[in-house]
Image (cartoon, rainbow, N blue to C red):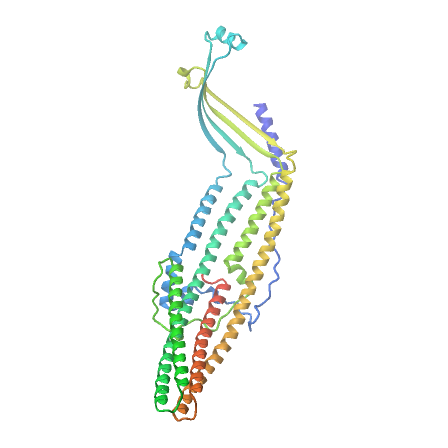
Amino acid sequence: MKKVKNIIITFGLALASVSCVSKLAYTEPELELPETFKYTATADTASVANLEWRQFFSDPMLQTLIEKGIKNNYDLQIALKQVASSQEKLKQAKYLQYPDVGFGVSAQISKPSKNSMNGQSLNLFLGKSYVEDYNAAFNLSWEADIWGKIKNQQEVSKMQYLQTYEATKAIQTQVVAAIAQGYYNLLMLDKQMQIAKSNLELSNNTLALTEKLWQSGDTTSLGVQQATAQKQSTELLITQLEQNIAIQENALSILVGENPGTISRTIEMSETSLPQEISAGLPAAMVSRRPDVRQQELMLLESNSIVGIAQANMYPSLKITANGGVNSFKIDNWFQIPASLFGSVLGGLTQPIFQKRQLKTDLNVAKIQREKNVLAFRQSVLIAVGEVSDALVSNESLKVQEQKAAEQAATLKNGIKSAEMLYKGGMANYLEVITAQGNSLQAELNLASVKRQRLSSIVDLYRALGGGWK
């Protein structure tokens, strides 16, 4: 009892000595964030990114596509499996503080040489030339977490799990944005197809009029050729648009996890509804909301815990081992209780002395990795602020561009009417009519493209601010 008491006192003193060691603290890196985003008039604390995607995208057809994408997109499904895998590791990490327990059964027969002392002793005391040994025992091994190593290992598993969770949210924001972008691109192509078909009708009318004038001798065959070429150019455009529409439908189908096929849409681009007056909120709030930035911060927290593990490996470790069970040299009395019972307990402090500089190298590498993650975290914040600023300036610029493009399209559309009237009255030639039609077609196609870009800039801003995962 006195020896056991001395062992307990020794371990108590060791634990008291290490209790003075402070845990490795985490210091959040300083971030040079602007007070407000560039190109914003006021510092509004509200942000459009706080809206759920169902509130942000009001088009029922688009909502259906996004629902399918969140449910069936393969990138998202793979990410969810990674979350489930990390969750299992996190559950296992909670048991690191408990001892390892095992059970083993063994049987051994040894026959020493008859000319050896063991062989002669066996014959003398047991009356046989071999010895049997039967053993059944539980084995226990436990390491005291006196330096926080196990706690840091649990923290690493937690941070890795949270990283996969944030990664899934980041992928969802990308999927939601990509589906919306593809859908609006499809509406733009529909609008351009409508414009092209309308222009084809004008080209047919111009060609018919030019042929009549040629037959009456009021124009040359060159006019007919030019009008025909204008019609053929529009027909070529329609074929190209049909191809682009099919490809865009296929891309959207794959995004939502379905085989390539037709995408239903019941509205035109002019009927789309997205928030026009968008509040970006504050940069500091964006940092805590963007999943990719949060993922980088969690990687930094993980590396901080790994530094703690590497540091703890350099200090003494307190390990306790024990085993106990039944043992006998005869199988018939193997399980006689209490005669066959045995047990032992061993505890000790182990201090690494010379490990070929491995422990110091591990610590230095862990510290360098933490410094790298600090830089990566700051870079992710800088990129996020830049993306928001880009989306803001694009949105403001495209407002003006859309207005100018609409004015230009209206002017050139009226120009077609004027050119046709002058042509019929013999006051303009066929080239002026064809030029007016071509300019009007290009202006209307450009207007549809600018409208799509404007919608895309709003979606980009929503994603850049961290919206889409709610």
